[in-house]
Image (cartoon, rainbow, N blue to C red):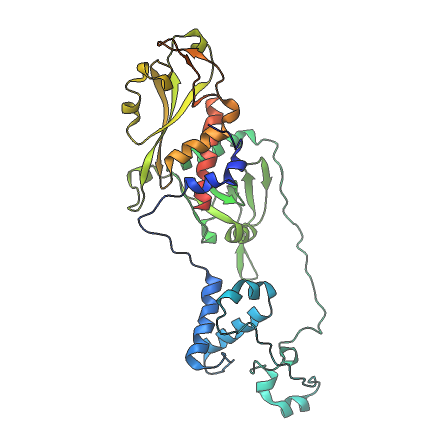
Length: 381
């Protein structure tokens, strides 16, 4: 096996990662992009009515579309993102700028009327409406305290908690799902923020400030840092860059969704060989894959070179759902390539055997590799 990738990061950026998840599903996922859908509503309106939406005082729906179009036209990034969906040239047109003298007296207001003052006509320059605040002095209020991440002194007492969460994700007892609600942020809950596992240990007293509820949190990150950010700050970050980790539900394994597909088993074995060359090696494990039961696969281990012509003991079995189990096995082998067993063994047939798929690695490190690959697959699924 050619060891082209030697770390989780290399695997995630490689074609192999795409192959792991390249499994036909019973029901393809429908991609929904709210920004595109909202713009296409405007396009449909123009096609139906023959004109751009106006800020019609009697039609709230049309007013909303008009405001939305104005907002898009002011944002170059949104224009660039949406222009391939602009089949009628809405984003190519430039708004006509009508030079209107600034309103500086009650007499000006009475002359020009409320429609112009309120900026009802989209062709008018919005800078001359009562909503124009460009001439006002901007007041910036800085918060009294800004939460920052810092290295956690006693992170060791939480380390096992993160490992347990990874393990439960691998076993299917937890799932990684989209973050949808601020109310999901409770004490003793897990999230993934920008690819890093996050544990909310505590949610402080909830207080209302300016009509909105907020609370100080104690957040612990998998990388050994902590933060006491506010609930609303974490929520905003999770909406943009995060996902939620479901609670541990033992019943998930017994209630696989109808469209889940079991694609095989990844197994970890320990050799029971009496050959001193093998039995003397500590932390020696074989990682393999089968679509049959693992018990059936190893039934004839004593007569097979892949099992070193010796019986084996099952250490762990992982049933794989919704991804290419064979490629998953390959990814694990690549990630552990630096731990490959490097010995030649004389087999019963008198031929030299160079074992494959055997690794000298602590079981905890092997588990971490499997957990991380599973978590990344869940994130990008």
